[in-house]
Length: 303
Image 1: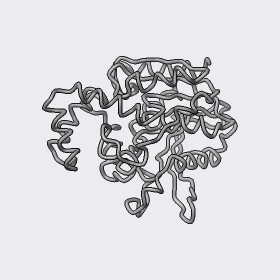
Image 2: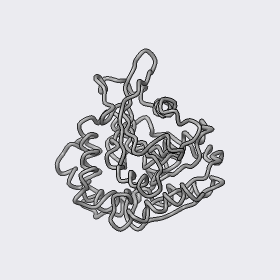
Image 3: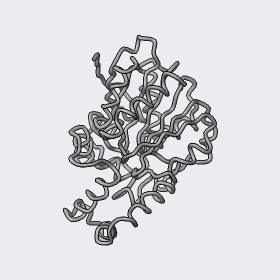
């Protein structure tokens, strides 16, 4: 499998940063590449690398990258950046910069997972890039209010001692407590990814734990308690303007329940919805991985 990696300079105001990327496949092959938008914000790309199999399945080049502030795109002084630095526009500008650098602006597809799906929906509905051919939104939402509604319902359904412990630590600001992490592990096991976690997922979440600035600034302490800059984020009223063929997916036990993804299906004109049997990361689940990759491959090659 052909792979190359590199970095592209990304200028923001008076500062300059480096966006790390990896290409699996050949951008000169003539096939429109798939650009992968990782979750978080602030969870590095590694957990999404099973999507590289799309190159083997249907010769589609796959582009992974780490958004600035995480993973291989970390920079000195990340923790000192003011909260106003971390915006949706920042990450859309970074994506535009990467697309231009790789010279794929005339034809590409986007696949976003979780926060990446939110960003992908916002990007497609606000910037309407002329080269965007297909959009895949996996386990995301068109507003943070819907995300909170979904995760809040799942929190209420947890055993009382688990829910009360999570709520107590979040209220007290003691989310670094081992007890809190133990209780959150129960939620993750049920709705995010079964344990033991694959190595690629451990790598991504370790990167976030090492450099939590982006997640904590934009989200807050957890999936349930959104206090960050994305608290009031929404693109719900714009998603009807997405004109490209769109695939929406989630899992039955996903933290992105149907309340999150159904507005995509109801409002985007050219849309398909596929649901999988497991949790938040179908590309990491034995029960769903093969079907997920096939559904994505079919969507990209037979619109």
